[in-house]
Image (cartoon, rainbow, N blue to C red; front, side, top):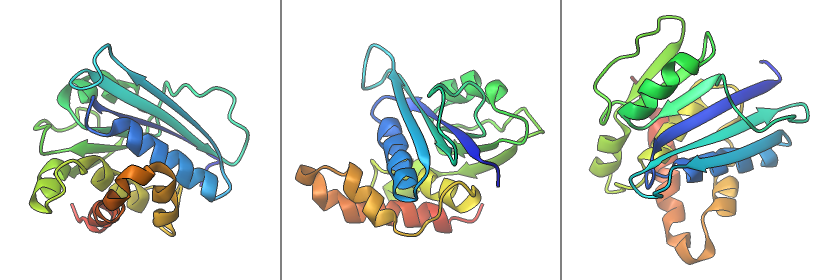
Length: 180
């Protein structure tokens, strides 16, 4: 496993892109890694574009900016169109195949097509497609373990929304166990 993994998560505002990135960053912290989390969104929070850069490393992180992601998760077609070419050679790219019908154009990356929006709706957790994709990322990438995901969730699910903790766990497990 390499020392540093650069992750970019992108989609529309309201899809939980920033929450997913924050979860991954806290999971890294709890595993003793060096992390950075850099949210970015367009002028409108909901409906505008949003992306989040997360770096997980064994070494101190110099810059929080991810320009060539090793792991790319896209939740809408504009994000795939924008970031596919920027992913590193050999990158793992996770695609919400419910909302994105096209396949990747690149052949030098590994693609994972997860119908996360449909899976979330079918499971009665329609707002948690983001965490289904994160669960699949944890399964396929060696940067972090799936152990003790609840501890990281407790850091990012606010006290006033604690009833969502179990739903987030359910979403992570659904993604982790998804076979494409």
